[in-house]
Amino acid sequence: MRQRTLLISLVVGVGALVAATAALAANLTATATVTGTAGISLSMPSNPSVSTILDGTDQTLSYTPVLGVVDARGTGAGWNLTIGATALTDGSSHNLAQNLTAVSAACHSGSTCTNASNSVNSYPITLSTTATKVFNAALNTGMGKVDVTPTIQVPVPGNAYAGNYSSTLTISSVTGP
Image (cartoon, rainbow, N blue to C red; front, side, top):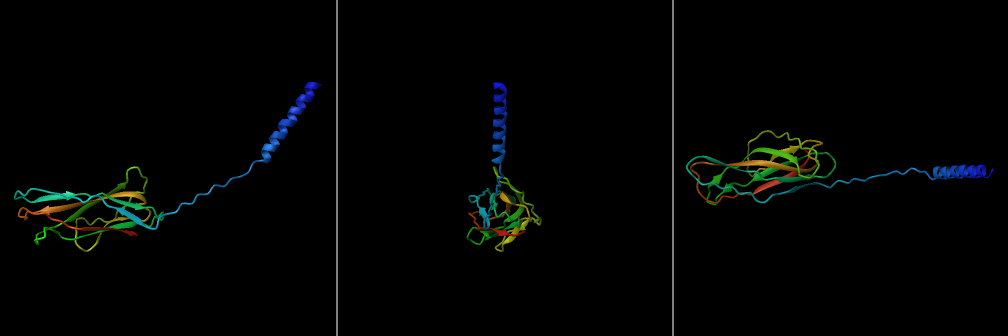
């Protein structure tokens, strides 16, 4: 009889423990707030420099600055880049042209992004003081950290004047495709 009483007491105790555990169950609702930034940021590389030695033949120099675009707005509204440039001059009225011949884009290393879908395809573009759209991230593309790399060529004719030429490029990131 003593075993039966112990067994009944044990069953009643386990039943009470299960009932107490069930009585303590509740739902927990998790929430997350994700806030975007106010605008697009643009980081510039160091100043590019190219050089050549004149030999009487036409030559083409190229430089490819990697522009860091960050679209952390979280809207998918798209963006574009414009470039304007002063004349590439030696200061003695001798100028060289600058032509943007291509633009590529990729997610920045170590970052997740939505690849930018570029619809600007009218290359080459001769750079001038008028800002010209050279790349655009269509709606719902270009979100995150994107490296945009324009290829800029400088044709040097065989009869060019020797000298140190310089130009100021103004690169802007603008909201909207």
